[in-house]
Image (tube, rainbow, N blue to C red; front, side):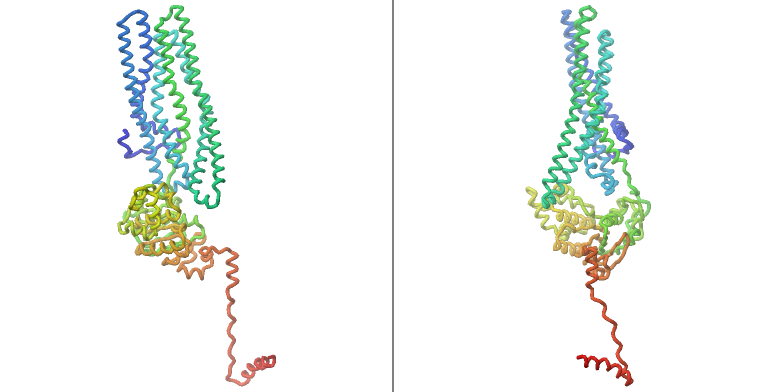
Length: 619
């Protein structure tokens, strides 16, 4: 796989049982690239380590006054230099290709998993962790995958050098063959402590990043309540904890790096002392001493990759565990479907609550519990994150439809919709029927002031459709983001549109106009609005009140206000004391009417007049 061939047509099925298994799976899928990097690495490191032998031959040729051997040695050094340049160039190219392709494969897998899980992803994994996995963790995993081939080439080169020195000069080769493994493995006891300190640093850095994200997201609210200093102090303390953890981690890695300089230096001193002793005894020549000395000095270069692979693994191991945890998540419902192949139509019915939404109408649903409203919206959209009774559309269970069919038939707009960065034209470029123009949807959602704000905030954008929206629409207010999201849903023009609190962040005048525009634009379509806003409820064809997860009442808004106290309490936000006061202030029932006296007989008439005489006397 080359970089120009990305993205993968099929990134494969990852082994997400554990972090190490995921790393092994990524390495296996990069086998071709790993082999290329290994071969180029062997050429590069072997050429580097061959230079000392060329130097030793040149020194010995000069000592022996042999121009022919000196010229031959010069040619060998030129050949080694060329091989070093070519090997390093193509090793870097192959390593970077392995890095990028491994990271791209993992990003595709994460994107596919996010699309597969839908809204269930952020319910089971924190949003901050998902962002961390798809950015920093992907980079660390790619680093480890590409470092494996370079480390393997370096390790094989060190073995070759040791064997060559044993053959070339056994007396000094034994010292090098014993000393190099000690130098390479001496840092292993320090790696667990260094890894644990690095894990603590990453954990604290993640907390600080999450706190910073929350602060930025709620900055408008913080300014309103004067809480900037409080959150600034919290972030300052969190950042100081990150700094202390980073210093402790850096100290350990500095000790490891120092050992990688100290131990090879000690080995070099031992080789020189032993070599001088052997040279005095006449057992080795000057050229051989220079060759062994140069080889030990040069071999420090491939030895550095031992520390790099240790660092790469220590940083990638927790990243791989997080990525495996996300990739191992599964939906609790099937996305392929098992029944109808055509999109159904008709009434929408939820067996769990008894809610029935008539087709081609504007129905409002009032829930006393906001969480229950969110779960109901998920069920109405089909393939809810929890298994249960399936919602029926025209008598067909949505669970029997594929996920794509269910989303085409029913569109759900969450309570907190997300605006993707880009132009407004790109935001509204969604799968749609074509019956609703973007201009009509923006007008129905009352987005005139939003368009003006976007044009003012975008340099050189005269057309509002070309104005850019910042990340998650942070430059806009909550009400402006809600209205743009509503316009996007209206442009899609689904057969059934479910809106969860679509106007909770706008003022009452704008809300009233949105309600009229929504009713006008969705005429002939099925619309379900989960809300407790009287302005929206008053314009609905039917209002359904859910209490404790079941339908408690249904009718028009004005009727339910007068006949259903629980509905009135939710809509008007009445407390229990206010409900009792309202009940006490209701007028008492009038007394039953007195029976009129029978005037057909005289005696009864006199009996009826006796109370009147008593009244006159008392007067």
